[in-house]
Image (cartoon, rainbow, N blue to C red; front, top):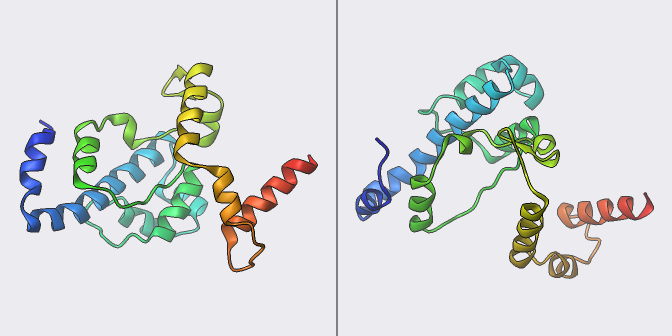
Length: 174
């Protein structure tokens, strides 16, 4: 039986538990998610390795919940191979408890960009009103214009703003 949010918060009151749990849940969840995403696509470990530029043995390690050596760059390569986003950020423990208490099977196998953009996700059609409301909600959180103004220089040491500008230029000429 899954642990409730209240039970998890009670456990999180202990600092030693928090320290171990924070690291353990990351690698255990990632291992299960990598395997689920790979199996959803009916790929072997060797096929995923080829798509992500790594050996099969490395994929096997990443699918082991006891392996705690994943690097963000490796996870980025996996995200590219699966064509999904990778989100890495710090969060309060209450948010972690909320997320874990609502965790479902769908959280382990997110839709690829192609599945998502075609409107198909887990066998259901995404309505236009849902997409519009999600876009509006996202635009309130992320002010793209403010980001562009803050990163207006063509500093070659700053790859993300350069990539944004490059994409904007290609869209403008298309």
